[in-house]
Image 1 (cartoon, each protein chain N blue to C red):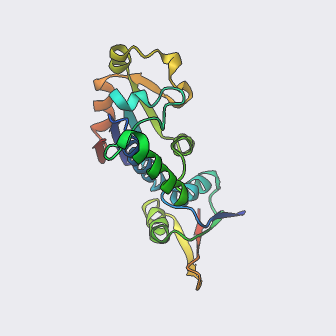
Image 2 (tube, rainbow over the protein chains, first blue to last red; image 1 turned 120 degrees about the vertical axis):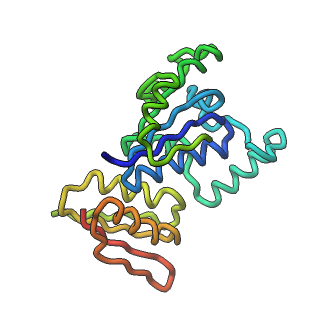
Image 3 (cartoon, rainbow over the protein chains, first blue to last red; image 1 turned 45 degrees about the vertical axis):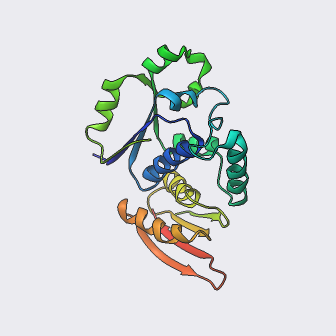
Length: 139
Length: 74
């Protein structure tokens, strides 16, 4: 069986979503399988046009910090989150959306980027994904 | 056998690694991938990924401008 990385994406902070997407793409690139379980603020980012809308986890400074970091990322040629998600999907990465979060936050499936989502699930789905995984992270 | 060239010069983490994997996925056994880049960590990590996937790295070279070229056999 192929080794697998499973990441719970709980945060919607821009820097943390970047970490999750880079680690997930890295796992696929090294020949592993990967699953991302989006929940809470992370799930908010799966809303249409919401992927890079989160603040920075620190020094957001009402958006000024985020603007500065984004401009520095652009200078360093860091690719967009959208591009990272498209690469992730192309390499066979799996995306799971947390159904309970959708219920709590009143998110309808049609509000989400449904073309990215492979499965809608709850904690049992995460456990089944993670129990044989070599890498599990909570971001 | 086909040869695929990928140019990721100027690209940073994780693009060189991801583009390499994308090309390998599309390639048939026996095909060769030549990847050209400048990101220093990827010069180490692309061969690591190949080893992890049981693929052969045929050649790694770097010029004076710190541009590297890695040739992989699928």
